[in-house]
Length: 181
Image (cartoon, rainbow, N blue to C red; front, side, top):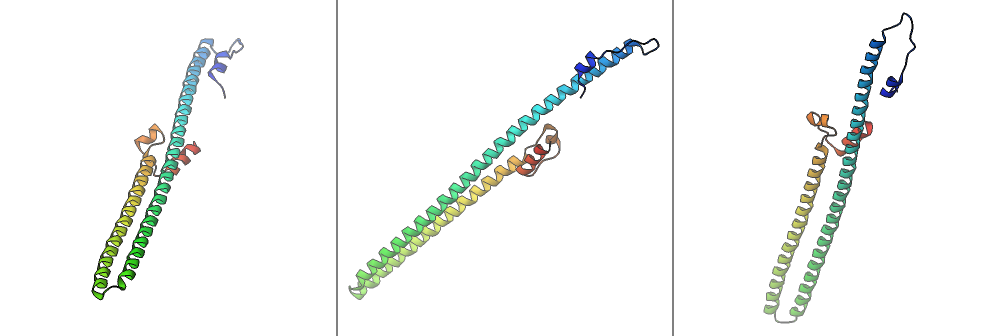
Protein backbone atom coordinates (compact mmCIF):
# COMPACT_ATOMS: atom_id res chain seq x y z
CA UNK A 1 0.00 0.00 0.00
CA UNK A 2 1.38 3.40 -0.93
CA UNK A 3 1.47 5.86 1.95
CA UNK A 4 1.66 9.65 1.98
CA UNK A 5 5.29 9.30 3.09
CA UNK A 6 6.05 7.29 -0.08
CA UNK A 7 4.50 10.08 -2.19
CA UNK A 8 6.41 12.77 -0.26
CA UNK A 9 9.76 11.00 -0.73
CA UNK A 10 9.29 10.05 -4.40
CA UNK A 11 11.67 11.91 -6.78
CA UNK A 12 11.66 11.84 -10.57
CA UNK A 13 14.56 12.38 -12.96
CA UNK A 14 14.41 15.52 -15.03
CA UNK A 15 14.02 15.02 -18.74
CA UNK A 16 14.49 17.48 -21.55
CA UNK A 17 10.93 17.36 -22.84
CA UNK A 18 9.10 15.83 -19.86
CA UNK A 19 6.25 17.09 -17.68
CA UNK A 20 6.27 20.37 -15.80
CA UNK A 21 7.86 19.87 -12.42
CA UNK A 22 5.40 22.27 -10.70
CA UNK A 23 2.36 20.32 -11.93
CA UNK A 24 3.87 17.03 -10.78
CA UNK A 25 4.70 18.52 -7.36
CA UNK A 26 1.22 19.98 -7.02
CA UNK A 27 -0.42 16.66 -7.95
CA UNK A 28 1.79 14.75 -5.55
CA UNK A 29 0.92 17.23 -2.76
CA UNK A 30 -2.80 16.68 -3.39
CA UNK A 31 -2.28 12.90 -3.47
CA UNK A 32 -0.29 13.08 -0.23
CA UNK A 33 -3.06 15.09 1.48
CA UNK A 34 -5.75 12.63 0.36
CA UNK A 35 -3.69 9.66 1.54
CA UNK A 36 -3.18 11.35 4.92
CA UNK A 37 -6.96 11.91 5.21
CA UNK A 38 -7.72 8.29 4.27
CA UNK A 39 -5.20 6.98 6.81
CA UNK A 40 -6.77 9.19 9.51
CA UNK A 41 -10.30 7.98 8.61
CA UNK A 42 -9.13 4.35 8.66
CA UNK A 43 -7.61 4.82 12.11
CA UNK A 44 -10.85 6.42 13.37
CA UNK A 45 -12.91 3.56 11.92
CA UNK A 46 -10.65 1.00 13.60
CA UNK A 47 -11.04 2.82 16.92
CA UNK A 48 -14.84 2.81 16.55
CA UNK A 49 -14.83 -0.90 15.72
CA UNK A 50 -12.76 -1.60 18.84
CA UNK A 51 -15.15 0.40 21.02
CA UNK A 52 -18.16 -1.47 19.61
CA UNK A 53 -16.44 -4.84 20.06
CA UNK A 54 -15.74 -3.93 23.70
CA UNK A 55 -19.41 -3.01 24.19
CA UNK A 56 -20.55 -6.31 22.69
CA UNK A 57 -18.26 -8.21 25.06
CA UNK A 58 -19.67 -6.19 27.97
CA UNK A 59 -23.26 -6.98 26.91
CA UNK A 60 -22.40 -10.67 26.61
CA UNK A 61 -21.13 -10.62 30.20
CA UNK A 62 -24.40 -8.94 31.26
CA UNK A 63 -26.36 -11.62 29.44
CA UNK A 64 -24.45 -14.33 31.31
CA UNK A 65 -25.23 -12.61 34.61
CA UNK A 66 -28.93 -12.51 33.72
CA UNK A 67 -28.87 -16.21 32.86
CA UNK A 68 -27.23 -16.99 36.21
CA UNK A 69 -29.87 -14.90 38.02
CA UNK A 70 -32.65 -16.73 36.20
CA UNK A 71 -31.21 -20.13 37.11
CA UNK A 72 -30.87 -19.04 40.73
CA UNK A 73 -34.50 -17.91 40.76
CA UNK A 74 -35.62 -21.22 39.29
CA UNK A 75 -33.70 -23.15 41.94
CA UNK A 76 -35.19 -20.96 44.66
CA UNK A 77 -38.67 -21.49 43.20
CA UNK A 78 -38.22 -25.26 43.26
CA UNK A 79 -36.97 -25.04 46.84
CA UNK A 80 -40.00 -22.98 47.90
CA UNK A 81 -42.35 -25.50 46.30
CA UNK A 82 -40.53 -28.43 47.95
CA UNK A 83 -40.69 -26.73 51.36
CA UNK A 84 -44.39 -25.94 50.91
CA UNK A 85 -45.06 -29.57 49.96
CA UNK A 86 -43.12 -30.83 52.97
CA UNK A 87 -45.02 -28.46 55.24
CA UNK A 88 -48.34 -29.54 53.76
CA UNK A 89 -47.40 -33.19 54.18
CA UNK A 90 -46.36 -32.57 57.78
CA UNK A 91 -49.61 -30.78 58.51
CA UNK A 92 -51.62 -33.55 56.86
CA UNK A 93 -49.71 -36.17 58.85
CA UNK A 94 -50.33 -34.23 62.06
CA UNK A 95 -54.03 -33.93 61.28
CA UNK A 96 -54.26 -37.65 60.60
CA UNK A 97 -52.51 -38.42 63.91
CA UNK A 98 -54.94 -36.20 65.78
CA UNK A 99 -57.82 -37.88 64.00
CA UNK A 100 -56.55 -41.31 65.06
CA UNK A 101 -56.31 -40.24 68.71
CA UNK A 102 -59.78 -38.69 68.68
CA UNK A 103 -61.25 -41.75 67.01
CA UNK A 104 -61.11 -43.57 70.35
CA UNK A 105 -63.22 -40.84 72.00
CA UNK A 106 -66.91 -40.40 71.71
CA UNK A 107 -68.51 -40.28 68.28
CA UNK A 108 -69.50 -36.68 68.69
CA UNK A 109 -65.99 -35.53 69.67
CA UNK A 110 -64.57 -37.51 66.78
CA UNK A 111 -66.87 -35.84 64.24
CA UNK A 112 -65.96 -32.35 65.53
CA UNK A 113 -62.23 -33.09 65.44
CA UNK A 114 -62.46 -34.44 61.90
CA UNK A 115 -64.27 -31.27 60.77
CA UNK A 116 -61.55 -29.06 62.25
CA UNK A 117 -58.85 -31.12 60.57
CA UNK A 118 -60.56 -30.90 57.18
CA UNK A 119 -60.77 -27.12 57.46
CA UNK A 120 -57.11 -26.89 58.42
CA UNK A 121 -56.13 -29.09 55.48
CA UNK A 122 -58.19 -26.90 53.15
CA UNK A 123 -56.46 -23.77 54.45
CA UNK A 124 -53.04 -25.33 54.04
CA UNK A 125 -53.91 -26.43 50.52
CA UNK A 126 -55.02 -22.88 49.80
CA UNK A 127 -51.72 -21.64 51.25
CA UNK A 128 -49.85 -24.14 49.09
CA UNK A 129 -51.75 -22.96 46.01
CA UNK A 130 -50.95 -19.35 46.92
CA UNK A 131 -47.26 -20.19 47.33
CA UNK A 132 -47.27 -21.96 43.96
CA UNK A 133 -48.99 -18.95 42.35
CA UNK A 134 -46.38 -16.62 43.86
CA UNK A 135 -43.56 -18.77 42.48
CA UNK A 136 -45.23 -18.83 39.08
CA UNK A 137 -45.63 -15.05 39.07
CA UNK A 138 -42.03 -14.57 40.18
CA UNK A 139 -40.74 -16.79 37.36
CA UNK A 140 -42.91 -14.97 34.82
CA UNK A 141 -41.68 -11.53 35.93
CA UNK A 142 -38.09 -12.76 35.79
CA UNK A 143 -38.59 -14.13 32.26
CA UNK A 144 -40.24 -10.86 31.18
CA UNK A 145 -37.36 -8.84 32.61
CA UNK A 146 -34.81 -11.08 30.89
CA UNK A 147 -36.70 -10.76 27.61
CA UNK A 148 -36.84 -6.96 27.87
CA UNK A 149 -33.08 -6.81 28.59
CA UNK A 150 -32.38 -8.92 25.52
CA UNK A 151 -34.63 -6.68 23.43
CA UNK A 152 -32.79 -3.59 24.69
CA UNK A 153 -29.42 -5.14 23.90
CA UNK A 154 -30.62 -6.25 20.49
CA UNK A 155 -32.00 -2.82 19.62
CA UNK A 156 -28.66 -1.07 20.09
CA UNK A 157 -27.05 -0.02 16.78
CA UNK A 158 -23.71 -1.48 15.80
CA UNK A 159 -22.31 1.73 14.30
CA UNK A 160 -23.31 5.35 14.16
CA UNK A 161 -24.46 4.93 10.58
CA UNK A 162 -26.64 1.97 11.60
CA UNK A 163 -28.34 4.11 14.26
CA UNK A 164 -29.99 6.09 11.45
CA UNK A 165 -31.68 3.09 9.79
CA UNK A 166 -31.19 -0.59 10.54
CA UNK A 167 -32.01 -2.00 13.97
CA UNK A 168 -30.72 -5.58 14.62
CA UNK A 169 -33.10 -7.94 16.35
CA UNK A 170 -30.78 -10.14 18.40
CA UNK A 171 -27.46 -10.02 20.23
CA UNK A 172 -26.27 -12.81 17.89
CA UNK A 173 -26.89 -10.54 14.86
CA UNK A 174 -24.84 -7.78 16.48
CA UNK A 175 -21.96 -10.16 17.19
CA UNK A 176 -22.15 -11.65 13.68
CA UNK A 177 -22.05 -8.25 11.96
CA UNK A 178 -19.08 -7.10 14.05
CA UNK A 179 -17.25 -10.34 13.28
CA UNK A 180 -17.94 -9.83 9.55
CA UNK A 181 -16.30 -6.38 9.61
